[in-house]
Amino acid sequence: GENVEQHPSTLSVQEGDSAVIKCTYSDSASNYFPWYKQELGKRPQLIIDIRSNVGEKKDQRIAVTLNKTAKHFSLHITETQPEDSAVYFCAANDMRFGAGTRLTVKP
Amino acid sequence: DVKVTQSSRYLVKRTGEKVFLECVQDMDHENMFWYRQDPGLGLRLIYFSYDVKMKEKGDIPEGYSVSREKKERFSLILESASTNQTSMYLCASSLTSGRDNEQFFGPGTRLTVL
Image (cartoon, rainbow over all chains, first blue to last red; front, side, top):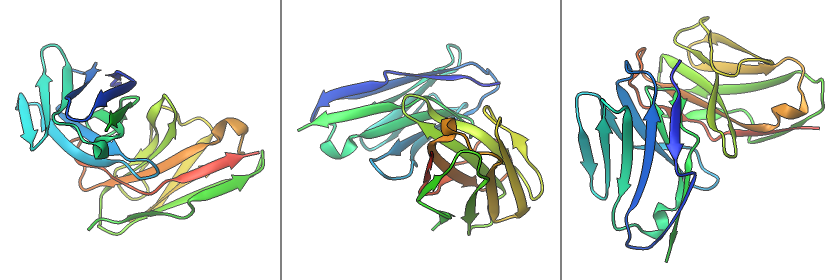
């Protein structure tokens, strides 16, 4: 079955810096790659997703890139703000998640 | 606005008890999922269902069973709770069959087994 690996497990940045989280997947048939954000004590919520026919997608300060050949995809957050502090999960298709990245943005 | 609700936010049970966790979604979603969330391990899939009375094992089904008698309700059952099942349990639903759908999560049930 699909195996998703996510790095780093923790990430700390200064407010205004960029943050990058990377994921790799094993099943070349996977074609949907969502990213979820989970704030402390809350449920995970989708923030951005990308499908395999697209190499990059952007929504304001967040972007996702996909390299199907290498089977990896990344989340990029620019101009980070304290409210970006959360745990971020990548996924391949709709039910295999990475282990999560705890992002801390220091004011 | 999709709503996924879970029967309890916090639950404390004793080893050996039978435990029922209920999940209800109100948007006529086809797919429903149960995950457990543990620090450093992310969201691990226990069971999922693409239709009423249908169930499929996920990655960690041992010690669990599920029931989906109605489209809106998906129950997770711990037949004989053990301490290693202490965890946060998250239910989720998504719109249609297929594997490219956003998941909507419930608030979670924090289960402690003593």
